Image (cartoon, rainbow over all chains, first blue to last red; front, side):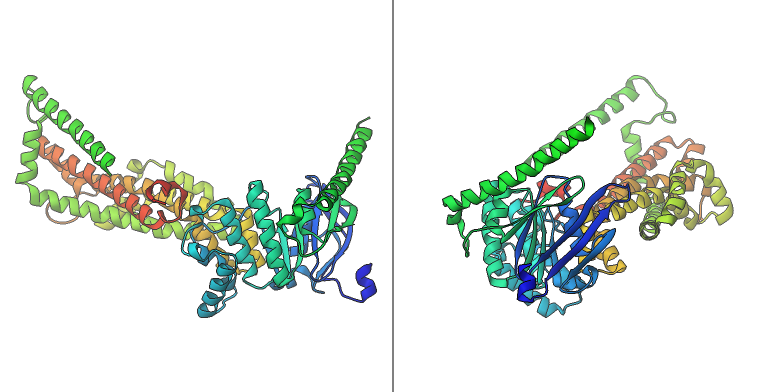
Length: 269
Length: 263
């Protein structure tokens, strides 16, 4: 609504989208939302709410059963050059070194070798991986692997970044550090971000807006702007305002889950 | 390294003990030489008939190597086709199992009858026996790609060929080497079985399989033992070369070779 007032075209527009799986299960029901250019939006919800499915729909990896999605005004499958997807596990190719992994996308798009090399080197420096450029993934820690994955996603200079619980497998300390790093990069590049997570703290720390989904079928329960100042740094986590936001969002999420439990009990009775 | 050396020494000690036991058992039990020669007569047979032994060994090595190499080339090609066309895979994959279960000893005479008794027929028999493990393992590696890696390639609008050669094929390398390891041992068995039926392809000694039947008919049991020994060493050498290639191509990145890399 705010975006419409300003007369801006939404970078990602999802209009009445439903997704039914082949088995018949309704994963998403009538989802409508817009993401403004440069906005950081988190999708938060219990498991089974279809948040990852929504992300895959935006990327064009799967097609909606009904409704329409556009990214930068195009069909998702045509807009892939503008998008990067960061998966839950780092999904690196184990037979390639760090720099070869980061350069994969450019290689697939037939970028000239000299340009590729330069871009990869620059990106590795940006995420602090220059010293492991020639190592293989199995020689890296979980956090480092994730950083390689991020570097690989950023090297093609995406406008839209899609992240599917990227830090779920990391311990809390590395997760916090990766969050801070992601925000640092976000400040510099200002992508449009859709970030799937089940961690309230992470969503609050990162997002301008949080979309809370309910499950069975997946639908939007709340859309909540995060009332915290920018730029956000590690110190923010120690402020009362941050804790207030976390507990506010947690309450909303718990409300959604309680409602769901009730509905299920009602259905059983 | 030190531990490996110690391990090798212990294995060698067991070998020497067995030889000694064999030596004295033959003497103590008065076993005739044509039934079971002791280790010395066998060693002498190796020494006296070394040129014959070496040319038999060479012939069998050639046939087995040709069969194995052919099975790798054809096997990988078939696996690539199987990975690209699901319908083809479902239709033909069961027959690769048939290829493995058919008793090679039973069809070897047929193949010799159809294809003649030269080294190529022998190689063909080695090829047939090697093919199934290569196809089965490589196919498994080609189609068993993690879903998100495929999604990653799709996000970059990768072509079918890019997916095949930059994702599926490297992903299948460890499986291919498992197949090669299995096949390298049976390639030698296949070649020898072939030679049992093929007879001498050249005027003279023939391969190990032929030489074994001939030595048997002449009751040259000491030379027969020498030939069996050579066949065993050959099988081991094939296996070892397969292992070495596996290590060479995979030790940098593959998890199963983790222990070999210092941090």
